Length: 182
Ligand code: ADP
Image (cartoon, rainbow, N blue to C red; front, side, top):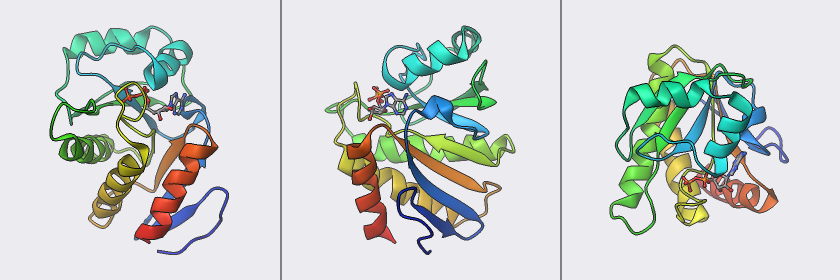
């Protein structure tokens, strides 16, 4: 693994580029973006609110047909009017509900797996569970980045995994953790 740039940090893991960027995830051109979903797959606030606002009503309609997803799981819909063709809805844990770390790791791994199962080449993640669900962002960065690195060291068709962080502070936390994990 080597660092290529600093402001948009990129490292290479076998055949896949892992990148950190700062901004609004609904602006990404990756094959899929990950929604920080809830178990009832109702698009509410935060990332889900932005996905609903920019993606249009079809995403919620597709979610309604799926009938929920367990915490730690991930399901896929189309991306409606988003730049990304798909949305992978990953259900992160709520702080204090128990087994949060395992559930967050599983939500990350299952999202990557769903992307691979659907033949996708690129995926963008937000910092799952660190908004409304109250999970600490530094620990989130440690868990999500370590899970992603583990996953990418096995066979995968993914060429690019982006972590899209909302704001400089969140970007700085992920940057610090990724540099430590390298
Ligand atoms: P959760 O319910 O899993 O906590 P949220 O959507 O409330 O999910 O927040 C998850 C993280 O995503 C938070 O760090 C929040 O600041 C960030 N976030 C909110 N909106 C966006 C967006 N449009 N793009 C990227 N990240 C976002």
